[in-house]
Length: 140
Image (cartoon, rainbow, N blue to C red; front, side):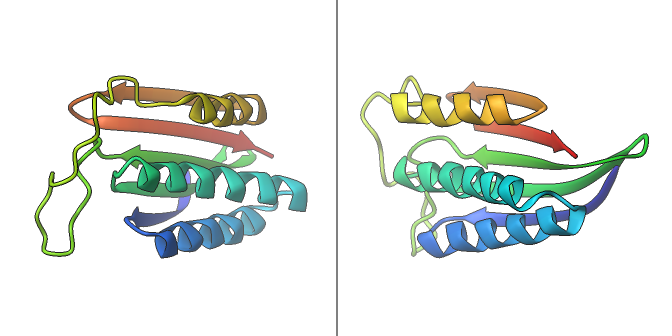
């Protein structure tokens, strides 16, 4: 069951800061230990930063959860396909990245591996057409 939800559109560095701050606030509201709050907000900002580095827009959805007396937080990072970054004039697809067949670099894989070990639930889906989704759930 979802109690609260925050959604942040990612298109610039300021959006990364905004997503990190909102994740920190919601994690504190749920009752996470300060060290877990730091880890959760770091994961959010790093995944958002990666989306921008790949010339992608994205959306981060942070939800507080409550299920069977347990509290937790869910973080979903939705990246649009590479090259679909929204341009200031509103046109899409102007930027193309050479052969971005494998969406995650070695650094990305290390970040995902660290997130997987920290998270209680972890999921990654990626398609060339739809982009990537990383979902992390952490319970108290």
